[in-house]
Length: 331
Ligand code: NAI
Image (cartoon, rainbow, N blue to C red; front, side, top):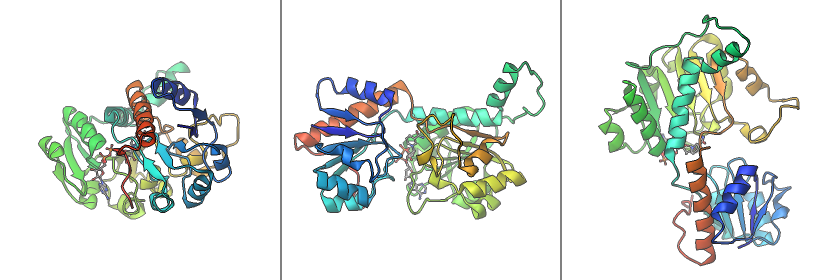
């Protein structure tokens, strides 16, 4: 099936091509991000394959529909970048990747937590400069601390299991409590109680209208003073400017983010030779108790292999008119 693959980086091309050997779909790799301006590049294709920062809103879907596109396959779990209702109206099926190594993200979240708490990146920069001073590098033991997990689905539960191994007490918040989380000794509480009682808060829920800015100025004011916030889920869960203010006052003791609300214009590209005009992220990365990575939590061989295989399998199933097991719910 002719498929336009937007936001295609070198690893997308290699891994998707590898997964496509047997299916032999005709893949058109495009480095462009999908927008209304770039959508015509999908002319002649029945499917488009997108990633988290592609813009698949109603306008773009209307253009794709006119071009004859009938399937949108996102190489991600989250699908907040896609207007599912508009796709439904236009008769465009949307599939995502529900199952790929949740360990990739959970393990990375733990890595970010350790890096920000124990100042590992700072220490590494220092030793490169020949500075072996320990001043400013003190962290705290995770053992015996309370960790709050918002969203105790696949990734959140694995994160909780790892932290349980560190000897942490677990608090959770989720619309649907999980027996696996409770089996770890986790206790479900309200968001406010979780924030007030946790030394570390990690976000693992999807971005929806309900969860947008679930961490905001008001909730940060209720959080335990000096706590660390980890976000490997979606940038829109956190009001970044409110988090910046909380860092300035010490209300927030550390911030570790792999996702950022305005990441669409920044992430997945090398901007090191340009002037970055996003003052919010520039201010954040200047803080000694902040670590920012560019949406790489999923980026392991295992996860990427599964993502690409599932994507190819979904395109094949669509072409054969089979049921789409990874079709996203109608909104
Ligand atoms: P999942 O669907 O297994 O778990 C999500 C959990 O969030 C569910 O238990 C759900 O009930 C809960 N939830 C939904 N609405 C909620 C609310 N209002 N308040 C509290 N909890 C709520 O999803 P999974 O696989 O664990 O992924 C979680 C998120 O991680 C994804 O939505 C995605 O945004 C993010 N992600 C980030 C990646 C990265 O590379 N940084 C890669 C993959 C996923």
